[in-house]
Image 1 (cartoon, rainbow, N blue to C red):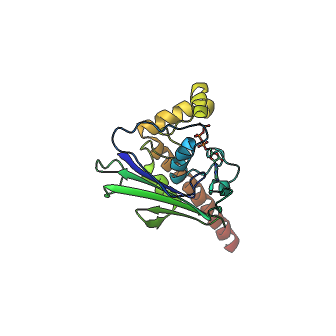
Image 2 (image 1 turned 90 degrees about the horizontal axis):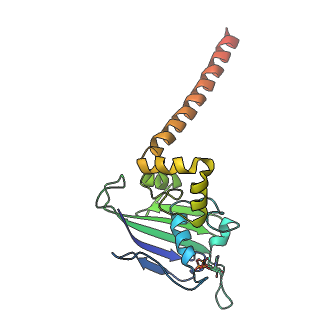
Image 3 (image 1 turned 120 degrees about the vertical axis):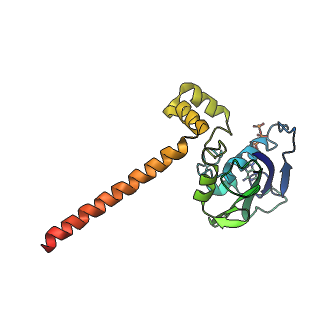
Length: 199
Ligand code: ATP
């Protein structure tokens, strides 16, 4: 699976639409301080579903929308699309090209899309689960994360290996199943109480 293209519009410092093609051989983005290099990484993290404003280096989610300059009006919408080549079927879908999109409007409305079809955040999270590409996975490692991995804060090292070895998916499903089981048990208890009352 290869990241092929990033399209950013109205996100942080990118007021105009910017396309970045990750052709073979592209390994780094360079530029002077403050020119927006980290904003490119933030855009990738955001489109993959990041919900933590701290991880996006922003106080609140609305602040990720381009807030204008002296000569330009603020944007009403932030939109980021990320495309992948999936010819090796790493992503569990029959599409050989995948584009995921996330939009956020100033009024707080948001939207996720996979290949231009509206979807839920969960669909995007599920698509990338155990591929190493999710917003909280090891494909995007910032300096602070390196410190956390070294200090093994909140089992971060173990989580990293679990994601890499592909077992996070099963742990998540186990958690969801236990939660369903708990709900069913409490429903059953309620039914038993009702039966006692009826008797
Ligand atoms: P450094 O090398 O110093 O880490 P960088 O190239 O990684 O810098 P970024 O941190 O990506 O730069 O970008 C910072 C710039 O983005 C700042 O000029 C900041 O004003 C701008 N910026 C952040 N959010 C917004 C926004 N919502 N609207 C407009 N500009 C923004």
